[in-house]
Length: 113
Image (tube, rainbow, N blue to C red; front, side, top):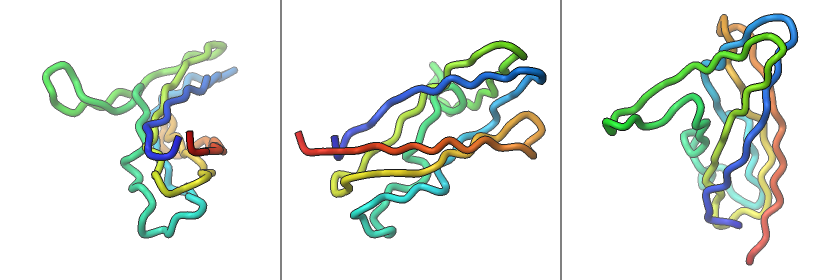
């Protein structure tokens, strides 16, 4: 629903080479029915497997590794603007050598309720 923190997960699989996830962003997001100046900032997206807060209350950065033939579940969350009716966007994933990225297109329909 608009105004909530929406959480989902995606499975990443690699066939031949190990992959290390080094970052996550929502640079290409388009929030419909919401002026760009009111759109949530990029930090509103969280990948819980990559960035967070440690048990000591300090920020932590993790770089999960995906071995060939294995699937790794990555959990995400994003604050949904209370005035938007739909979001569509892409999240870029920085990979092992920081020169490769994966784009994931997301479409969320929201309604009052």
